[in-house]
Length: 367
Image (cartoon, one colour):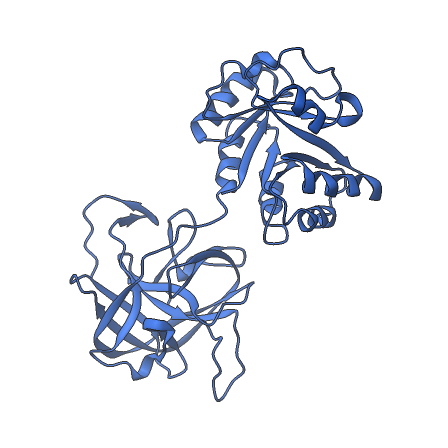
């Protein structure tokens, strides 16, 4: 989980509404230059004081963290000795090589480093993240909006530990909090036993090409029903007649579901360049990957039915061709056209029904 901090210093008349929204959304920190703003905040949120351009107050009040500019306020380590009940951090504005080195030193040494990069490039942030990779402190990077926050969270794969953003309107704090949820929950995969296969004629199937490499034990979950999916492997494993394409999953017929973000499902036909889907390995470990394109073509189709130990079922319709494969227990790569009743595949059997992709508790019969 990444940290989401909001800056309320310049919000104006919307301050109270934004603060209430932020608390409801569960942001991790609220930053102000006024001790009075922090006093009413609950201890569930990090109360951050940043008197930028001002002298430090004599009393830090309810502040949990005080961010200082050493040129104005002194060194965080020295202030921490004088005020042992408060955590101190350093603010650095990065505009050149000298201030970049200061930011790297802060990342290595300070408990909190608030970083403001004046240039739009993310290369300096990459350098700071790399320099502070083994440090125990947190890097909080200033973002202008939620879109930039999402980029900052992903820089160098590790991303900044947190983002500080001044909301422009009500709704921005919630969006920032959601952007901080960079991961997706791991899943409990189960063994499914194949009960039947059938050639079902022609139809459109989707190859999902992503902007990342899949691992050998990784793919995406696909199914005709939202409550039963089978783990389709990428084209990472060698084939006799074509080169490997480790970014691709020959996923299934266009009506099929796959898992996206925020616990939603998407039809394969809905995916497009820029969509986010969930990659899953044989242990149920997950990560979000970005779709580069979806290639839909007419092909002969094969239907696979499978059942779990508790009687719940799954169906997968995919291209009827030997080189289209799924994963079995232990990461066994199984050619779909060779599957027969009694074979075991890996799958996922969620319990919630779906409405427009969202999980919902209601009656829904899929067959």
